[in-house]
Image (spheres, rainbow, N blue to C red):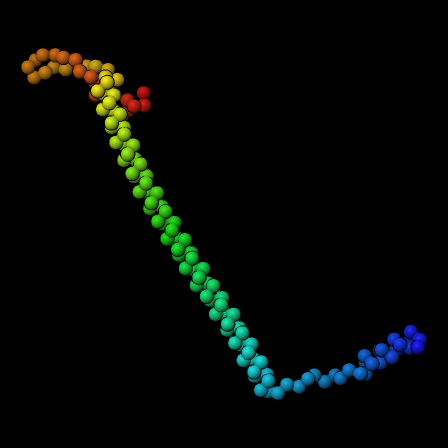
Length: 127
Protein backbone atom coordinates (compact mmCIF):
# COMPACT_ATOMS: atom_id res chain seq x y z
CA UNK A 1 0.00 0.00 0.00
CA UNK A 2 1.22 3.39 -0.94
CA UNK A 3 2.06 5.84 1.85
CA UNK A 4 -0.16 8.55 0.30
CA UNK A 5 -3.08 6.19 0.04
CA UNK A 6 -2.63 5.29 3.70
CA UNK A 7 -2.80 8.95 4.69
CA UNK A 8 -5.92 9.50 2.57
CA UNK A 9 -7.57 6.46 4.12
CA UNK A 10 -6.63 7.65 7.61
CA UNK A 11 -8.06 11.09 6.85
CA UNK A 12 -11.34 9.59 5.65
CA UNK A 13 -11.65 7.50 8.78
CA UNK A 14 -10.96 10.57 10.86
CA UNK A 15 -13.57 12.66 9.05
CA UNK A 16 -16.32 10.18 8.47
CA UNK A 17 -15.69 7.48 11.01
CA UNK A 18 -16.33 9.61 14.10
CA UNK A 19 -19.79 10.32 15.38
CA UNK A 20 -20.59 13.99 15.95
CA UNK A 21 -23.26 13.25 18.52
CA UNK A 22 -22.35 13.89 22.14
CA UNK A 23 -23.04 11.16 24.61
CA UNK A 24 -26.44 11.72 26.11
CA UNK A 25 -26.90 11.95 29.85
CA UNK A 26 -30.18 11.66 31.57
CA UNK A 27 -31.52 14.44 33.76
CA UNK A 28 -30.95 12.22 36.80
CA UNK A 29 -27.28 11.75 35.88
CA UNK A 30 -26.85 15.52 35.56
CA UNK A 31 -28.53 16.14 38.92
CA UNK A 32 -26.41 13.45 40.58
CA UNK A 33 -23.29 15.01 39.07
CA UNK A 34 -24.26 18.43 40.39
CA UNK A 35 -24.99 16.99 43.84
CA UNK A 36 -21.59 15.28 43.90
CA UNK A 37 -19.88 18.48 42.79
CA UNK A 38 -21.69 20.47 45.46
CA UNK A 39 -20.75 17.89 48.09
CA UNK A 40 -17.07 18.03 47.07
CA UNK A 41 -17.15 21.83 47.12
CA UNK A 42 -18.81 21.88 50.54
CA UNK A 43 -16.17 19.50 51.91
CA UNK A 44 -13.46 21.75 50.49
CA UNK A 45 -15.10 24.84 52.02
CA UNK A 46 -15.41 23.06 55.38
CA UNK A 47 -11.75 22.09 55.22
CA UNK A 48 -10.72 25.66 54.44
CA UNK A 49 -12.92 27.04 57.23
CA UNK A 50 -11.28 24.60 59.66
CA UNK A 51 -7.83 25.73 58.52
CA UNK A 52 -8.81 29.37 59.00
CA UNK A 53 -10.16 28.65 62.49
CA UNK A 54 -6.95 26.79 63.38
CA UNK A 55 -4.81 29.66 62.10
CA UNK A 56 -6.86 32.18 64.09
CA UNK A 57 -6.42 30.08 67.26
CA UNK A 58 -2.68 29.87 66.63
CA UNK A 59 -2.48 33.63 66.07
CA UNK A 60 -4.35 34.22 69.31
CA UNK A 61 -1.94 31.91 71.15
CA UNK A 62 1.02 33.72 69.56
CA UNK A 63 -0.38 37.11 70.61
CA UNK A 64 -0.98 35.85 74.15
CA UNK A 65 2.57 34.44 74.25
CA UNK A 66 3.91 37.84 73.14
CA UNK A 67 1.93 39.63 75.85
CA UNK A 68 3.06 37.13 78.49
CA UNK A 69 6.68 37.47 77.35
CA UNK A 70 6.47 41.27 77.46
CA UNK A 71 5.00 41.15 80.98
CA UNK A 72 7.67 38.69 82.11
CA UNK A 73 10.40 40.96 80.75
CA UNK A 74 8.86 43.90 82.60
CA UNK A 75 8.86 41.91 85.81
CA UNK A 76 12.47 40.85 85.28
CA UNK A 77 13.43 44.46 84.57
CA UNK A 78 11.82 45.62 87.83
CA UNK A 79 13.52 42.84 89.79
CA UNK A 80 16.88 43.62 88.18
CA UNK A 81 16.57 47.35 88.86
CA UNK A 82 15.55 46.65 92.46
CA UNK A 83 18.54 44.33 92.92
CA UNK A 84 20.88 46.90 91.36
CA UNK A 85 19.48 49.55 93.69
CA UNK A 86 20.08 47.31 96.71
CA UNK A 87 23.63 46.55 95.55
CA UNK A 88 24.28 50.26 95.02
CA UNK A 89 23.01 51.11 98.50
CA UNK A 90 25.25 48.44 100.00
CA UNK A 91 28.21 49.73 98.00
CA UNK A 92 27.51 53.31 99.16
CA UNK A 93 27.32 52.21 102.82
CA UNK A 94 30.58 50.29 102.39
CA UNK A 95 32.27 53.32 100.80
CA UNK A 96 31.05 55.52 103.67
CA UNK A 97 32.30 53.00 106.24
CA UNK A 98 35.75 52.90 104.56
CA UNK A 99 35.92 56.69 104.28
CA UNK A 100 36.15 56.59 100.49
CA UNK A 101 34.35 59.93 100.13
CA UNK A 102 36.58 61.74 102.60
CA UNK A 103 36.14 62.96 106.14
CA UNK A 104 34.39 65.90 107.74
CA UNK A 105 34.34 67.52 111.15
CA UNK A 106 31.14 67.09 113.09
CA UNK A 107 30.13 68.76 116.34
CA UNK A 108 28.58 66.60 119.01
CA UNK A 109 25.74 67.76 121.27
CA UNK A 110 28.17 68.41 124.10
CA UNK A 111 30.10 70.84 121.88
CA UNK A 112 33.06 68.64 121.08
CA UNK A 113 34.29 68.35 117.52
CA UNK A 114 35.34 65.05 116.04
CA UNK A 115 36.16 63.73 112.61
CA UNK A 116 33.69 61.38 110.83
CA UNK A 117 33.56 59.78 107.42
CA UNK A 118 31.65 61.84 104.89
CA UNK A 119 28.41 60.11 103.81
CA UNK A 120 28.71 58.82 100.24
CA UNK A 121 25.93 58.96 97.67
CA UNK A 122 25.09 56.85 94.63
CA UNK A 123 26.65 59.50 92.40
CA UNK A 124 29.96 58.85 94.21
CA UNK A 125 29.91 55.30 92.81
CA UNK A 126 30.55 56.68 89.33
CA UNK A 127 33.68 58.57 90.38
